[in-house]
Length: 252
Ligand code: IPE
Ligand code: IPE
Ligand code: MG
Image 1 (cartoon, helix red, strand yellow):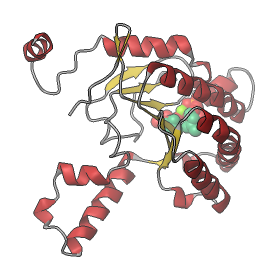
Image 2 (cartoon, helix red, strand yellow; image 1 turned 90 degrees about the vertical axis):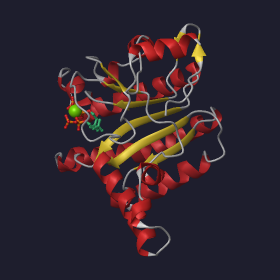
Image 3 (cartoon, rainbow, N blue to C red; image 1 turned 120 degrees about the vertical axis):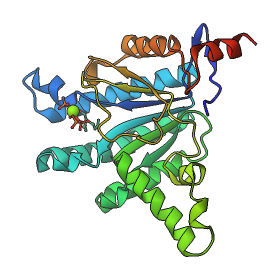
């Protein structure tokens, strides 16, 4: 069910925003630079969007940093991305803590090198007590992987005789899906001009409003973010009902 969203000025603010941060490579290539320069420049946009979400009272922000399919990129690019994660995690954790931002990494992190896994655990631990924005970073994440791991957990319970197979319904499976303790995604933003989901939060985005921006991720800042929020606020979310039903509920 939809979560109640806080109002900021006139705007209805999404409780949970997901972002597919796309366009780093093209941003760099258009400047005659190697793709990694675009990934580095993208970190600035991450910082900016975290700040904007905090200012607007967004509860949760989930950023797609590395998909389960991104391993198929040239080994050098993958290696540079891993190095960048390690550096950024170490560098940013203090600021996150200071700003009361709680970090969580979702995805199959067991595939990462031990040093990166350790940095992730340290950063999560360092911010574990933070009460402000929930910042989730999807790394080696795939929506299908997420559903499979949830199904495995449910099947295990059934195998152990703790539940009947018939008890596996949407609510039960949903408890095992990543980010089950946070609101469902209200607004999904994809930068970089492509209009696809690319195996991001498939379950959690079942009723998300979609916003596609032509802006390449390293150029994504205030204006583009505000445009997405304004657009979101103008949508009528019907969740299967009729427009008239929604209007009646709003008036009563
Ligand atoms: C998104 O930017 C970042 C990652 C997938 C890690 P891209 O690297 O996909 O940039 P484009 O789409 O090639 O421009
Ligand atoms: C999606 O971007 C993954 C991330 C932003 C991390 P991609 O650039 O990998 O997506 P496709 O391959 O164009 O669908
Ligand atoms: Mg891309």
